[in-house]
Length: 308
Image (cartoon, rainbow, N blue to C red; front, side, top):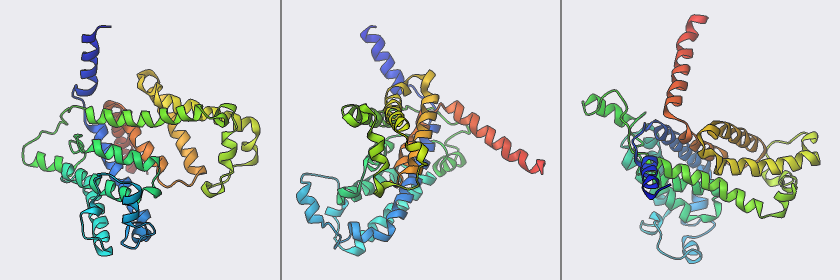
């Protein structure tokens, strides 16, 4: 393999124009997740981020020094301003979901998300980190090129035709890479731990009462199934980090990941984490398959009234 062929493959992977439909669908899902996150936090906005919050802004700046993009450090710091910022964040998330002023909305949503996470680092998890990183690359993606009010406006003004124009997918590729990296790093660290290698890790997970949502039947906690569950977790996370890049294996791996996260959603109380991760799966689906699925749904919906 020559250097020239490597460069050509690199450019084709990152910059050959392709349909922006996957990143547009991800934009919608991403915006919905931001809205859901803010709604879940709504009863405790001021407890987490207010002027008299459980952790003060000065404490955060002392524990996490250095230059950071944080709107809380440049605005008048009072509860009224904090609430105004979060309502502004919510409005930008709604605009982003609808695809109205998509680029500006994505920038505002990212800055607000970054600010509330920097304001209180101790209530975030890896799902929040992925949401932040994905939001950064979403600012540079053609996220409003499909399924957006912006596109409708462009069509009505005659600036764009009815066909969705291909765009360079480099920002989408970076979000894909971040998702695969999340899985691979998780697999790597687990594989260095004794509990995951010897198959006992799921036993401990099943006994973390504070995270449990719904119970498992007793037969599901048999030692053999516990071992298989621990090893299957490693296999799934390795597959989603590495094997997902092989087209022949991609859809089976995505299906396995979907079932895995749905099980975790049933079992564990980690708000929105599973859905944040699953939202990025759409970026690995070929645009033609997304269109095929949409046409099937539309045909079913149109045929439904006639069957009654």
